[in-house]
Length: 128
Image (tube, rainbow, N blue to C red; front, side, top):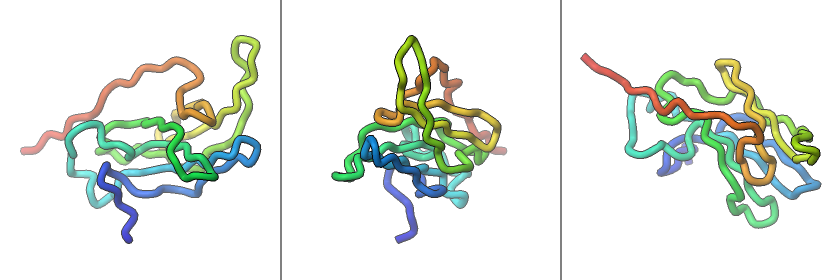
């Protein structure tokens, strides 16, 4: 098996896990040999953090940092487990860095961003 999935991407760096919440976080990257190709849709789950239930293996959430990652801006390190205090509540979270210096703070269980952010969309590759 070469690590590719039909939706796009391959398993990236080491997984991170949390025994307390029974979850595993996997990083998925674009296959470098496919950077030139733009598949239809949002290229799920490439350049993503995928949260899995450790008992069942079922996906409990996902966060995609870059749609159509033609510049190889994927995530460069395993997620770090943190707790974030927001609006008086402690949220189990992960901190996820990228090659271009972004640091995403994501809910450990759902993969949703803890702090608001807006996607800039996807890059368009031009030829010729």
